[in-house]
Image 1 (cartoon, rainbow, N blue to C red):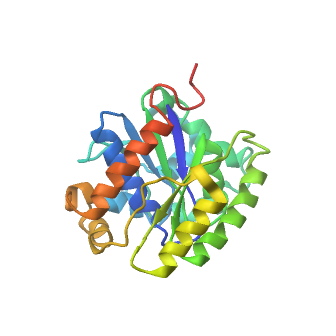
Image 2 (cartoon, helix red, strand yellow):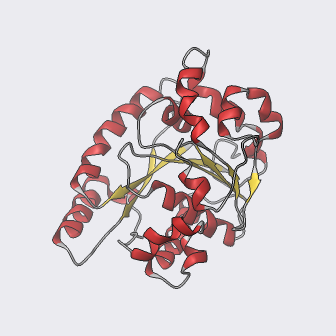
Length: 261
């Protein structure tokens, strides 16, 4: 199995949409998939239509109380994937966790048992480079970067690279395993230029599949559905199916991850 962190510190680049849509497509291909929401806004949780009650355990309780790792707060969704949800309670986590020993490794330790039960674990990280993102990166085998077709997002890659270098003190093998271009409008020179520069700079790391700028993709999270459920024949849904196939080829379920033999 393999654990993939979806990460880039810039917001609005498509991390959550990619986590939900890619996760559903991997599940539809017969894989066991766990999604982990580590953003206090809980957008991935909302995008999957999961309602969390005030007393329901979430990723916050898991990080604060590692004993919950014996029975992870996993919710089954309607889309073939399991989810560890997040709510606004997570906003206070960084303060609570800042004094804990091994605070960057809490999520990795908590997910250790889950690795036996899933083929893919996808972690949706917040749009920052704080402690929650550090936990997502340390827990991951590799990183997939959703890279918006915009110069600001491309510039953010350098800062992410610096963070990865720091995280390697804990996880020496951590690396960027893939880059997916999102919000691509091939009618514009800007999108074409960004794609050209990204492919020249990062070569085979950039997936062939690109995610289009799409009204349907923008609408889907508000309905609590991944794009494949909301508009299965749309260009966005087709693009995520193609991306899922590339992910499966790049990291076959039976061979990926730290547990491979």
